[in-house]
Length: 148
Image 1 (cartoon, rainbow, N blue to C red):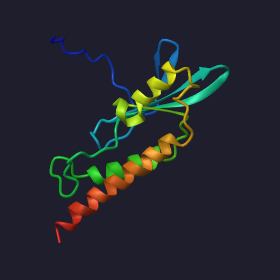
Image 2 (cartoon, helix red, strand yellow):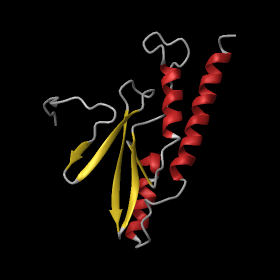
Image 3 (tube, rainbow, N blue to C red):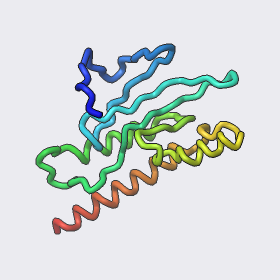
């Protein structure tokens, strides 16, 4: 099915919260994967506990030209700044653009089995970021080595 293009009714800037129903979402510009990549944070409350929730845009660079990229010359600097910023964030609940990034299928099965909330995983985001940053650095080093 083909849908009509969405109509832009405003531009969201860093630090300008957006209210969606009762939820307040905060945008964080996290370029690299795309120039306009935006990660969102919000608070969620369950059983009297408030959690920091993060919706990650992406930090992968699948097949991207990181070295001497004429279409995105500052791609490496953008990734590095994005990694730096994201690594400072406190995250109780990690969500992302693709379910595979945060083990959605496993979490859905855990819910179906009646297990405690599987979305609250201490350290999950930090572990994801370490792996993602290591992968990025490896890809960058490989491309830089080809220049010499």
